[in-house]
Length: 248
Image (cartoon, one colour):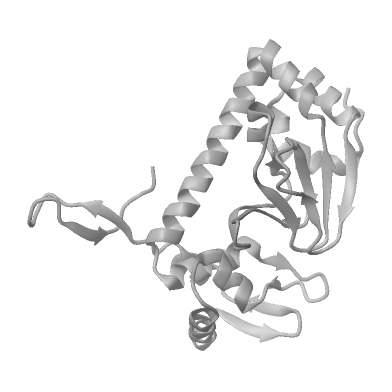
């Protein structure tokens, strides 16, 4: 019988925790603690310490910082996402996590999950599957940020960080132009020009709450217009050409 708070259930069942044996899941959640995180607050730092965190609601970015202070976003986590799982296996994590909007998370015991995974193949395989999924998501984001045109990169970022505005019910992005530029590896002026184009096309509009996404389906089509570089058989030996290709 599950003994954790009922409010946690949707996120737990949507996460990889739902695939764990009931006993292991119960042990993890009985010792877990809920934490409310204000916007821009850091959930955990790049300290090297392992973490295991379930997002209940809100939006979180996981990122790395260079020695020069530049940041790169690795992934975004929403309700049902578990952060820090690779660190359970590795014993350390070089990444940090920061709430983008008001967020609620559940922190769980790293030693407990590691011990269960080492003894129970069902738990170990569930962890391995989730780590593999996480790796593929990071690979896809890297490929998208390198190969996709600016329009697609801006659109993907907006979709990644958009949240519902409770007052209006509209889908809104609250980050600044500079934040968008830093996340996709370009400059603020390019982002501003792209957003002006989106507004002219009816994809977005400005409001006091932020950038409103007015046509989600059209924005998804823009975000999916990836251009991946692949080798072609034609042309001079080894010549590169731009072609639409799936991520692997």
